Structure formats: C-alpha cells, structure tokens
Length: 508
Image (cartoon, rainbow, N blue to C red; front, side):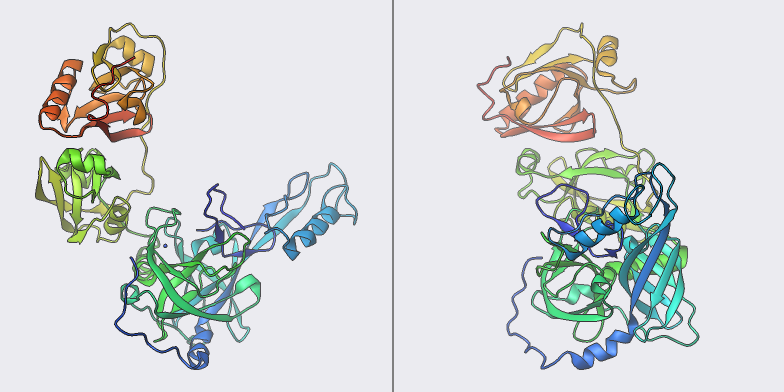
C-alpha cells in the first residue's frame, strides 16, 4: 500500500486495512569505540514486554456507491488482490452471488483497519498512530491474552500522527515506560513488537539504522530508521531498547512491494512523550508557534548575506501581531539558533519551535546586516490552521518598463493598470516585474512577469531606479549574487540572482 503522493520513494502505510488502504504517515552514523555484544536471546525481554503491547481494530461505517466500493491498492502479486476482486465481483450490483440488484442503492458497509499500540498507564491509557484510528466510529483494543475492550479517544494529533486512547479495565494493566530517544545511537539493538497483517503479537529485532530521517510526510519529520522487520499492521506499535523502554513508535516503511525490506521509520519517543502529555492534559497538541514563513538558506543566499555556511532558516514572511512580529524579527533575518538549539537548516526550525513551551520567552539568534544579534520571542500556541497568501495573473500592461542590465529583467512601479493586470493587492508595495528574458539570470531562478520585488539586499524598493542602485552597490562589493525578496503567487520568497554569470547578459 502506498501513500497517495507520487514520489520515487514509496512510504507504505503500516495499518493493515480489510477494504481500504489507510494513509499514514525519519544524524549521521555515530561510531562507537566498541560494539556491545548481541544478546544470546531476546526471549526474556519479549516475554516481559508483550503483555503491554496491544492490537487495535478500528472500524467505520460508509455508504457504498451505486457501483460498489473500489478495489483497494495491493502490492503486485499479493494474495489479497485476487481475493478482493472475487469478493467485490460477487457483491457489486448485478454481479454474481446476489450481492444486489442493478441500479439499487447498496447498504452501508463497515471498513476495518488493524494496527498496534502500547499501554503507558495501568489505568488504561494506550498510545497509537492517529492514522490507525482516524475516522473510526468504533475502536477495539485486544490484549495479549485475548481480552477485548472498547476504547475512546482522549486526544489526537493529526500532524504528528499520534493518538491517545483510553480503555476501562477491570484490573490494572501491564504498562511500559518511555526511554530517551536522543540517547539511541546508530547500531544500537532495538526490538519491535506489533500486529503485522493482523496476525497478532509478533516480535522482530534489529538495530537503529539512522537518526533524524526526514521522509517528507509532515513538518516535524525526525524519524528513527531501523532494520527491525515492521510491516502493515505494525503502525502504532513500540520500538524498544534493550532496557525495555519505548524509544520509538513504528509508523512507516520504505517498500516497493508493501512488505518489509528492512527500512522502517519510528517517531522518536521524546516527541511521542511530549505530545501524549499534551493530549492527556488538553485533548489536543499545544505546539509552540513563532509566526514566520521560512525558506532554505542556499549557498548563494549565504554568500550574498556574508554567512560563512548556508545554515539556519531564512525569514520570508512575518505574521502580523504574531510572536515573531512582537519580537521584531524581520524579513531577511536568518534564524541561526532557537531556544539555545542550533538551527542546522530550515527543516529543523518547525520541529524545534513546536517542541518549545507555549508562553515561554526564548532567545532567538538571527543574522542581520552582517552580524549576529539575539532577540527574545514569547511563543504562542500554534493556530489550528495557517492561512497561506495568494496573488497574481493578468491582463495587458500600459506602464513603460525599465531594463535592469545584466539580470534579464524589465521593471515598473506599481500602477493601477498593473494592479489590475497582475491582480496585485491594493496594499502591496514594491516594483513589478513586467518582462523576463528567456536566457537571463532572473529566468534561471524562476522569476516571472507579475512578481513584485519588495526588497533588494534587505532594503525596501519602490522604483526600478532604487532596484538598479542597490544592485550596483552589491556589484561594487564584488558579491556574486544579489538577494531579492519577491512576492509570488505562493507568497513571499527570497531569491538570489547571480551577478557574475549574468553580467554580460542583456535583457531580451
């Protein structure tokens, strides 16, 4: 089963579904001075941990379509593929087997998803993946001894794919505790326990293959990669260290077939533990929010700003009235440290901010005007939904453009005609791009007519002359690129335009 996105890397959902695929939702190797010997057996550890790992069955009622439900995707050659083809042929309208009369509405159907979970409190708190129980109107937890209990949802984190359930047992349940996932090293032994393909409690062993994996499934990706065999149905199950502590929650696999190929991904326990505590107390995650739009610091951007290394996250927009605005962060600032933690790249910042305490004032180290400075930001709670900005597309132009030599650009001040042509907001400031030479430096960096240049080298511009003046100032400093803040259809973005290779090119 695959995620609905088309990427060469196929990340398979681990929840095993009877009628529909459930969508789901990864530091360099650390060389040890010596290797710990492999245990003679995992039997004693497995026996101690198995009672705290549960099977989770969730189901929902759906109205069948007139033509019957669609066949779920299965790996090529899967034994389930022909089974479900036969099943649906027998039960679709007009099909053999009396499943319905042609043209008649079909009855409601129950869709079932199977996954795993683990008990963290003897009173009945169970942790699993959100995608295991998403959309369910009935959730059943099955213990190792076969005892079944109905479960209710305490809280869910859709973005982080974490859910907290509660069952009401007759007696205290066996529970496991969280370990420190930051202490796990590449090469450490780990044990995975779960419910692969609905078979029931299964144990597999392997090692930590990598830390800090980003598999592009969400803004907080920081997965542990392991070669312990995990499959569909293992979703929500625990990854244990050799002390029997939960160091991860198994969530996704890399697979071309839908089965394990030795590349599985687990949410680190430190992240799970933090979110679970919030779900328990508030029923929803309470993540820190800074209120900025960011982009990658490329080598060109770093060079244009005088940064030695392309590290950090560049601010490309600040929410009015948000924590960043109140802390006086500016467009063009590069955030190098947040709450005393290094921001290695733009992908690290959302996770660091989200894990910071809401309401806490934290130091933010930024690079501005060629030097570091420290600001203080009081974090707010992340809004449930963040609105994205939109902009341009157009009609004919009457403004006379000005050529910007060497970059392949023609610019004009914002006029009523250009606002109408490119659908520019009434309060938008800057200079409009009216033409881009096909082989110029601007075209190479994706600049298009209708884009609005708001700043050049972190200074606001309102006329083509001001743009040209700032570009010439950068040339005199012998920099290789000039940095522009551009309002595009998908929002603000910092764009470095090369000056060296473009010097002799003229606009067409």
